[in-house]
Image (cartoon, rainbow, N blue to C red; front, top):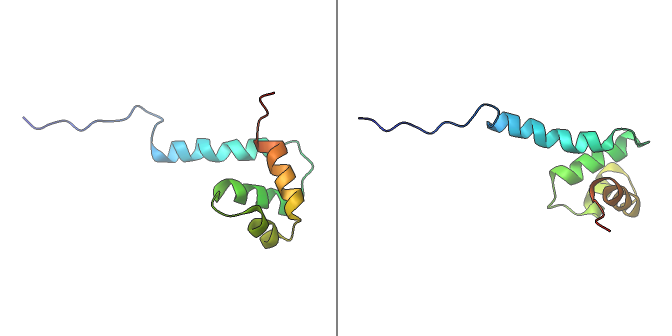
Length: 80
């Protein structure tokens, strides 16, 4: 008798996980008055955590401090 391959329940494939993961940062940006460059830079920060704020800010022509402040205000939840 051949062994059966394990199957994942519906909704647990890589495409679905990717869609759920990509919805998180996009939803966080809604309702904020951001420029196009700021939105792209924030999504770049989310997608490439190995890059520094300075690298990403320079790429999009933004101030590093502004980008870092936006990042912490929108994505880092305070526990206090």
